[in-house]
Image (cartoon, each protein chain N blue to C red):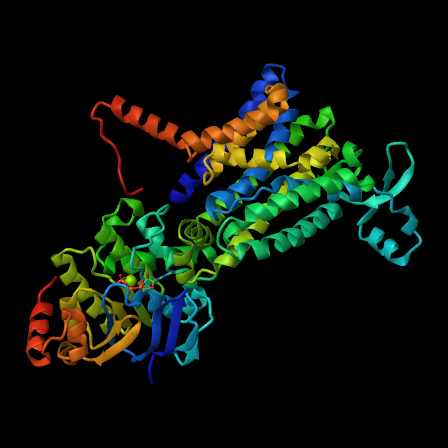
Length: 270
Length: 363
Ligand SMILES: Nc1ncnc2c1ncn2[C@@H]1O[C@H](COP(=O)(O)OP(=O)(O)OP(=O)(O)O)[C@@H](O)[C@H]1O
Ligand SMILES: [Mg+2]
């Protein structure tokens, strides 16, 4: 039974078709990657899945529930969380508070209870704080808990965003280019972290341009080209797929020789 | 321990309030407490606005109108003579429940009006409904639709009040009776009750600040700030952004109306200028002057500036002064003058300290 099913999704902006005829599934426990050149429609697809954009047609099913048309916060409450291509932290808050926002859907006191510090509310608040702190610790940023979010380096912002997404206790985590802007060491750490997250039972769907990372991590890959999936399969199959090769190396290359060229190119960081 | 530290500013505020009264008494200037009390009620409007603008990131240009709704509802219900319903069974029932009370009007006639407490609840209920009706459509969208909707709404309330005989038209409503909150605690403008009324207003402000502080240091406060910062990310993190914006706006409108009710009983009346667009703009200017997302800054600035305005310091330039303040804040110190001032003083303090050591990070 697939955790996430994307069926024949299409979305256009004016005359530009950003995503079309896109169908794939994500099985529970997988790390699945979506790759494709710039402008291929990967972020648009993420926005559709997480409810930020409505598809023109097609449907998305999560936990066997149709989620097309639901608001992002409703989908988030079903157990889907995400990070953004441009880290979007809440810059007025400190790092810990950012992650605490991730606990929103896992806590319940409303306006009246919080105003009055109703019995039970302060305890929930402490719980939120402790859980958020544990998530920060998990991504290795506990020492920065009280820094203003705006003071962080780019790579650290990505990690805080990841901690914030994890704080929602998702069953499916969408990562939009988590490695972009990271240095080699940070990328290696990220790879290990993503594996660790998967091992604790979270299914991961990621968009990534760093092919070495993708080939190392992903169990399964979907290749998008001008919004349309052109190949799907495990890394070894994708690396030798003639259509993928022509998209990435350009021109009419001989498939068998180019396959080797591509896997050589992708085994080192760009 | 940390809880104690959090409560320290409240203790200081209470102390400052008592000290002010003591000082004014010593200077034989206790008559100034009247304007200070009024300024404290106005401060409640600005504190509410701080919740909407500073935290939820929405602009309301209709808070004068909510103040007026509170004030006028109380004023009308507590001065209008409902005697002609006396014979009706339901009126008898309401009289039993103290919703209707008998009293004398300005000319000494015996009349039957709604009691101040019942009028207060009616005002709150009306505000709740009106604010929800305005906020719901405007806040489902991203952007500054609320500013436009509340601006239009404010103009409607102003024109309605001016053009309706039952609201006293240009004269407003006078002769609003006193409001006995509890035995010995009466809201009225009598000079004998000046000191007690000052403390009622100060306690009310303090209590509301405490409740709001609790709110803002909770998941609700963080959700509102998250919406202000990045609405899309907030929504994707599971926050029902439209509902939170609406609740913050309604709560803030209720605070304005609450202030209006107290103010009207205190000054025994209310006039159409309270519903004017200029009043709403003044509240926005005061929120900006206090630093928007800064409950203490907003309270101090708005009490101080409104006090000066009520003492007539700005003369015929009264409204213009607040316009100038708004422009200055926006162009020079968008975070309010207090923050840069605090930074400057902090910098000065650290330079004066011998080691020049500065604390950082973890608090
Ligand atoms: N809100 C929008 N309005 C108009 N066009 C858009 C919008 N969002 C995306 N597009 C267009 O849709 C296409 C797909 O964009 P998308 O951001 O999904 O690509 P991507 O695969 O994520 O690219 P990248 O690798 O550069 O992040 C692009 O041509 C982009 O210009
Ligand atoms: Mg993208």
